[in-house]
Length: 534
Image 1 (tube, rainbow, N blue to C red):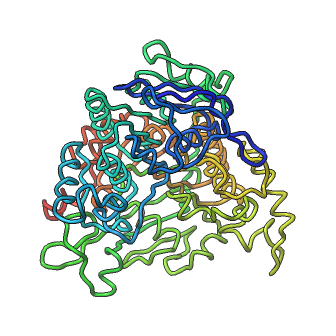
Image 2: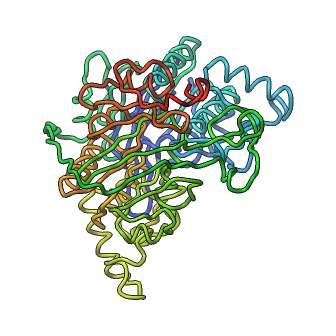
């Protein structure tokens, strides 16, 4: 496959300029670059979602023109987007067959094919599960299965490892190597440069919308790749001293949440063995089970866990979008368990959500309106009962400049930004209100190495000023590097403590999947039945 001279313009910005990319059959070709460099736009062009203003695309020896994703799919090109394209109110099976009913029908044959693909590549999907009940990692696997179901010979994977633990990443890479051994090609987009170097055969670097070079993994390092991406040398990180105080900011005591409010409503969940579903005898299972912890001023507490083990419910309970069935939450000594979300936010709780599209942004609204979200009653967004648009707009310009949000202006919609630039806007918004407690769920998901370092520095700076942080992340290096204390969540319980100074990603990954935890300190309730403890 060859892309030559690809150029794509949008009002006020050139997303791609004279890009050249050649992908050889049976290889993994990595595509790296800063947020807003043009990677996603280029892939949307290859997938038929957008048309280039200039340039050509050739598949094999034939020059092609794609008017829609259906055209690309017909030529064996499939794409797994960074933000999933799934219908929440449909089952996994319905999502997979949607638009491809002619391949295997919608019944037994389709189910058989889905199981075959799932088993072969270790995806572990449940055909009858509703997508709205799935965690981020499970949605990712459904998207990959959709592409394979359609018989793609070229897979475009946009940040496919963002939600995987090290063991799962290794398994995925084994699958990619198997795919390429069968003659399939993979275009792999990632900001995790170590992973790129381990799995790719070739690497193309894009900077400011144009290709700046191709690297061979055996002849380059992550730092060299990063400097190609940003066009300059990266600063050497400094060792941070501990800033943890003895002043408790957030205290969670015996917090319990049942599946979909089942305990409160007296209903049963569908039995399928997952976290938060009905246990034997019809008893509704706990998605959070007697969780207790304390976070002090100046402390970052990291929580490691495979997606779907209670992290989302913990976040919802802390921010107030879901009621706890039992237990209590104290904020600076005050019981806030019954407080509404707005009151918690106004009292100093910041929130970086795990899914920026569903929970953090109004995609069709301009940037300055998105800057107001969650802080409508606070300065500079409001004065008394009145919104102050000019002040909000001025502060949005400040955030854009300070956080290097790549945008032609603050009046463009949030949807027009790359995923990483959307994330920087959200982080800038939350940090601008000097929170006392920050819930940071995957704060650097989808951002490049330069922006990642900047976000980490912002969190460290605020921590020195007394900020308490709950950090939930699928990036184990991020958890280890930022956390003062580190805990592992499994099946709704905090099951182990780890020392960030000594623990390895592999040890964390084992604990997250319920395997042996090495020298990690177990905190499992020994009175719990053995099968529940597992």
